Length: 232
Image (cartoon, one colour):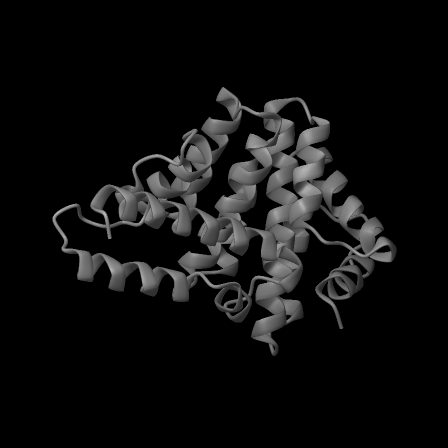
């Protein structure tokens, strides 16, 4: 059963409920199935927080809608469930801070998946060519609530905001003093850890694999820059 079918089943039992209630329901509805709980939880987090980001910014552009669809490979018959949840989140009087805290409770021991959510939100925010001030404040707040480490957040922010990807050593969380061999080993480790299969294993649905591909592309681009710089 796909993550979208699972999401539809969850929503059908919560007619008229606020999204905050939906997020809470994910924790209990799939208590005996942690893999499905992570997948549905990630999906709900992305949809709800992207809706709140759009509301915070005040404008939803066509580019942002397209970027949203890049991340969400949604079967036509399941699109109604995503639209329903997205619209509920936009209309809900609860602020995004409350949403973020509830999402955090879904993944108390999975900081990597929270960074995946941040990557997805940045992908949507930058789609119209610029991350606006309100969107940036939204991102800063979400990162703080999620407890994303400063150096990790800087890497995420730089990859999405710097025209040429920013400092490749920062993007790889590497030290310029390292030798070529240490850098190569570190790069290979990052490629392994950020392979799409790894994201799926920790709960990111296969439908969201664009997140993994974008992250891996950033790692490879940074490594290419370092190789050119060092002549290796």
